[in-house]
Amino acid sequence: KLQREQRRRATRAQHTSAATKAGREGEAMGRRAWTRAALVAAVAGSPIAEAMVRGVAPDLQAKYKQGSPFRCLNGEKEVAFAAVNDDYCDCTDGSDEPGTGACSGQEETFFHCENAGSTPQFVYASRVGDGICDCCDGTDEAQLAARRPQGATACRNTCAEEGARHKAERERKLADLRTGLEAKRITIEEAKKSTEQKKIEVSKIDAELPELEKKLEELKTKKAEADAVKMQQECQTEMPKLKEQVKSLQATIASLEAEIVRLKGETTTTTTKKVVSEYAKWMDGADTAMEAEEAA
Image 1 (cartoon, rainbow, N blue to C red):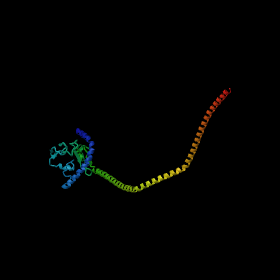
Image 2 (image 1 turned 180 degrees about the vertical axis):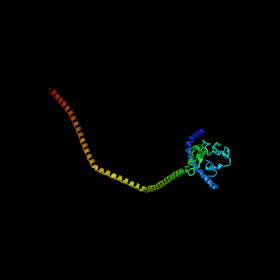
Image 3 (image 1 turned 45 degrees about the vertical axis):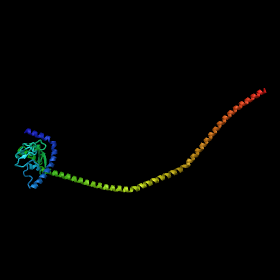
Image 4 (image 1 turned 90 degrees about the vertical axis):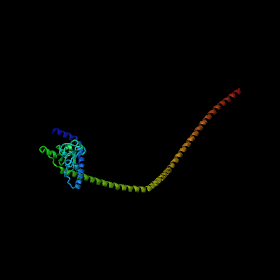
């Protein structure tokens, strides 16, 4: 017993990370299975609960016919129907033990929780009869409680409370979804109105653009004319000043030219006087000497 309990715990630990995903998928699979089973039962005119095999999803119940040999779902062999849920794993895929934990450790072996009043789901076979309530209706531990009336406590059916929570959560999500969709609709409508308004404004601007461009050219022309007039006025205002400056410069030039002429004249006169004077002195000296010689 201790070794079996240790194996169960080890198997449970191996499947812990995958169990959450399996639970979510199990809920979805359970809902789809019950929907299909309800349709089949409605057509056949028989109640769904009739001849239900423990741990088998409604859409697979047809493969478990009481009184007929059971063929493993992987098709490997057939076993007597008494071997189904006898707590001994005959099929390698574990399909002969859908309601016990005998085929624990196989990823494709699941136990179906009916969870009437809440959401149907699938749990790993390793969680069946392990003393922990996984299904809200407690069906995964019902067999253990039957085997150990003194040592095992039957799981309390909490599907009504769980179903109410699930319903409230679905309604909350649905309300959030409706609120979001309404906000989306309003946003889209506002965006459409804004887009139409922008299109109208763009069309209006496109229609006014030629006239605006014409006015711009006229303003450019007027500005150029105004600049020309302003420049002319400035020239007229500055002209007398410029003329006075020209006259002043001309007078300065004339004064400088006269000074240049005067200086040139003085230089020429000074040079001429010096040459004539020396020659005259020499000539005078020569004549005096000649006269003295003749007188002698």
